[in-house]
Length: 297
Image (cartoon, rainbow, N blue to C red; front, side, top):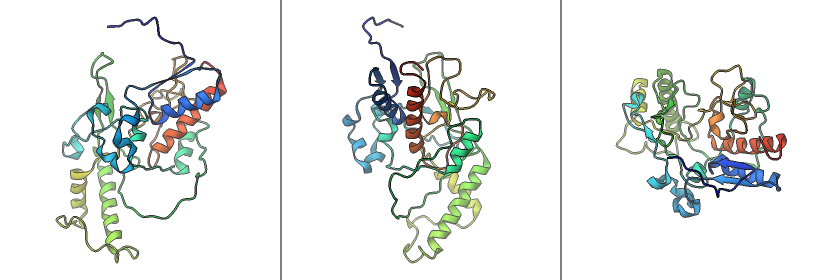
């Protein structure tokens, strides 16, 4: 039942969601417009109250239901009808506080493509803040999947959880790409000049990996899981695109004073981890808001 609170404060800027992007937006607005007030709204507690968020190796232990939005996920037909969860952090810092300490800027071509889709000003790629160091790891990740999932309303009650269907591996091309990646990766690790004398045997020893591509496809459908970081549900696009939600300054169409600033605005998935773009989007929208006006959008 709706109610009115007469004691509510008035703010010049209201940032809804203190996640990866939201916290940065709030800070930059406060720094850039010292004469205005900024309200950052977050549904969950402070990250300081979530012990696992403060220990890098403990991100895999963040399974506390009270710290997650607990979205309902549809069983994935392409993954042998398994339910693959989509954890979304419900505390200050958002998913940056349960990330596996990974930060990848992404390829310049990804951002150039976004700009070429009718979004001027989104092709800049900043320089690395520090020089990197050597290391090796191997994951087979599917970038640019062909299958497209959906997020649907479950009712006309805004407090009800949406119905999420990732549609993982419902396109055979996605399965083929992952299977070939697994096959090549296994061959490189076991026979490659720089690794064959380091890796003694596959692990765990109870698993044998066939060189047959069909077997790898079955393996993919059986064990593939999420890389987390969903995006692209609030597309940035010019007005000529009927699927667009926000323009290149992240203003929601036909809604005055409202912008969206997180990875939901990405019209395509960058080839890499999405946390770095989340920070970049936050920095960019704060700059644009301050550039447009000191108080209103």
